[in-house]
Picture (tube, rainbow, N blue to C red):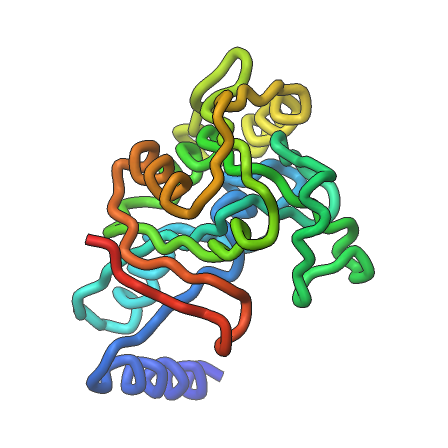
Length: 222
């Protein structure tokens, strides 16, 4: 078995070392990370920049790596678990790849949440920029509401260790928070992108509109 494992490792290293770019994609969103997500509503995956670096180090690859965060224009969540900005009025944002009929449970949607964005960025590691998808939302509904804070909090505490008790407390608190929304709604993609850049202090490197390869449009913002 050790010989087979070594051969597999060598084969993976050889493929990753070929000319061209290699894209690593996280198995889940950062807020579902087993140690940083809202326990027990998480996955078994570790989703941060260190996870990729660990794989490359183990394979003896020292190529340059750039890390980017990918986020939707609005929040989504399957099944149970905290989603402070959940709004049934967004149910009209149908998604052919997500429905309430699957084993994952109800598919919920929420308005953009600066508190969760800050927490995700605090947990994920150093990023070179952000990519924002589903900006066609503004062609489908009148607008979104920007949650800049909760009634008594602007940030969530990141545990210094892997502490599931801490994550459970975050879950309990998020189930009770009251979102504080800006008085003026977001009515176009540029409104949202400006808010995201100001909150994240990261450049938005690309955007997309639509949910298939036919309808996706991308462009680079400088």
